[in-house]
Image (cartoon, rainbow, N blue to C red):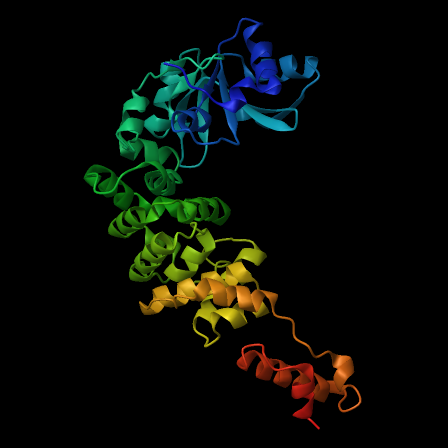
Length: 384
């Protein structure tokens, strides 16, 4: 069996692999790029497993004139930059000792041993240069069956890296199926959930954002709550609202949006337990506040933008279990192109200082309330 993907044929990909193979080392594509190729999904990250020692990888790539960075050399990882693409090259290894975040490793030449230390079977599939698949743990069967399975004992895998708790739910939302029996996994996740306290807020935030962007997150969140994981991440949560939102997205054919879904699910400040960027945390705050306001879709689009207006209306509807108006998209378009006809210069001969700003705001709201129809002349007559 072979995979087919554009990245296999990039000149930079061929060059990096050739440098390793021509020196007599094993080199395989592995992880997400192989998994995604099997699912016909585009990959941005290209991971390579090799039998070459990391210091040898550095030497080979630097001698070839390629930029090589020892990004995780203690664990066997070197990042090579070729044609502005990053190739993460990791020496085949076994994890000898772990503490939930870091591992002591022993390098190996066995892809089976390398596969056994990975998290899920769907991420332990390898590919040769020509796309020929090597599947030591039958991960392809699990991809076809939409099963998210820990490799070996879930307790052992989770204790190696507690972030795998959140990765389980993310992969389930991306590649799994609903109603699959996950009793063993849920018990392990529940019993080991305190391990998340040892993981940085930044790493957890990254996983949560990816989870909430996944197309089929509803079942994952259901199981997350069943395993009492959500309370380790959020102070407040609303599964019913998230369910309402998912139904609206499907019916209106609106693409998933992580921030919209987070706004429907939690009122938390995303800078406390989690560490989202200031921009994302601010947008989340605006969505929650405007969802509680009386502004209609047109006014929201005028004051912000089309996307935030739509997201606000969908969050508001999901929180209250209501339906947005049938003309929501046309109303958003009306607001997005509306131009307030009054400028401060038009009022400067009548007002100054704070009073000028107050009158501008008053007239703007009056114009908005008229559905953007009042003319400049008509608005000015109201102050003369």
